[in-house]
Image (cartoon, rainbow, N blue to C red; front, side):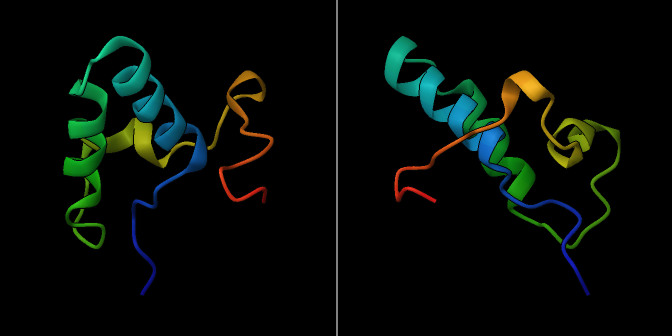
Length: 66
């Protein structure tokens, strides 16, 4: 069985950017809540975490260079 929600790079980057650059942990907490039970039916509240990135949201390199 595959998880309904996975930690997509663009969502992780958005959460990190909000926390580091603006001191806003809200996006991180929302992401953490969405990922807490990845095999459960996420419903509408987590729909954004299931979507692939838009072209402008694509993460071209991660911290490990992949």
